[in-house]
Each structure stands twice: as C-alpha cells, then as structure tokens.
Length: 197
Image (cartoon, rainbow, N blue to C red; front, side):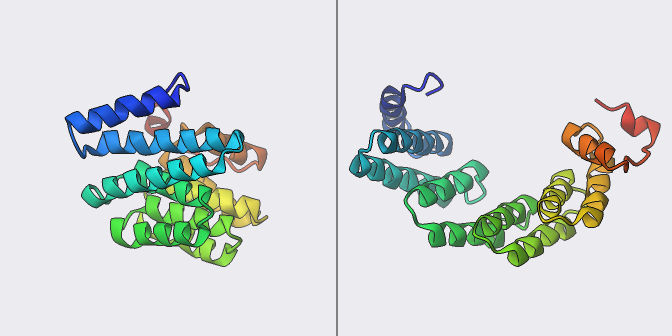
C-alpha cells in the first residue's frame, strides 16, 4: 500500500482476513485500501468501479466499528468514504453519532465541529469546539482546534486565549508558538515545563 500498489495490497489484506477473520486492524487497512482504490478509479473516470470500492470501504469500516466503536481511524475513514459517495448528511450523522456514543472525548467533538464547519454551520461548529474544551480543559489539541477555528473566523482576541492555553499545555507545538509570536502574545511558562522535550 505504501508503494501505491493498491490492487495487490487489497488482495493481501483480503487474504489476511480469510486467515484471521474480523481483526479490527486488518479491516481498517482493507477500508483504507478500498478508499485509495476508489480515488484511483475516480481519476480513471471509472465511476462504477469507484463506487464499488467506496461501498466496500464503508462496509469494512462499519465492521471495525461494530467490534470497536472507539476505533478513531475507522470513524474518520468511514466519514471520508461516505463523503466520497456523496452522502454528506450520512457523514454528518456519523460524526454526531461518534461524538455522542464513542466519547465523551474532546477528539470526537473536534471531529464533529470540523464536519459542521465544512458544511457551513459555524455556530454549530463553535458550540462543539467549546464543548471539546469544556470536556477536556487540559487538552492542548482541543484548545488549538478552537483557536484555529477562531482565527479562520477573525476572532483574534478569543483565539489568542486558546493559543496561550494550548501553549501552556504543550510548549513544544511550533505552530501555536508561531501564532502567538506573530501576535506578540507568548506567555511565560515555568522553566521545568519549558525544558521538557
């Protein structure tokens, strides 16, 4: 798969599934391989074959989520496959399901927020970003995600507060540090925190 030989990779993943059926990691890889095959078929203008691969990907990801509902890569993969199929409402419902039933985890709410933002629902997205931060105030990723959203929507003041929180939680994030430096808002941190790799 890394060599972009998706056909042979798909064969070997299917063979592995025959030898050791319904293993989450292998099913996920089958889903990812099917998505890549679908993209190749779309480029070749072979839409019927592409849609067969998309349906296969959805099936594989669903099988993973049946045995491991929190399998994050399969949640994202299924969402991508649904969007490739043009099922944007189903993709959004899938993201909402993940936020409600897989969590509660800030990552799931950030995922849902990004899906809502993609569909132009900025108010819904902001609410989910805020929920992610409220749910896990110690998550640098949640603070960074809402800061990115706020910067995209030109709310610098609120963004800087979340950038500073993200920096305090993870002073090694170069993007956060660059954003703060650009705005002259780098907070001071305790020396022992700054020394951590």
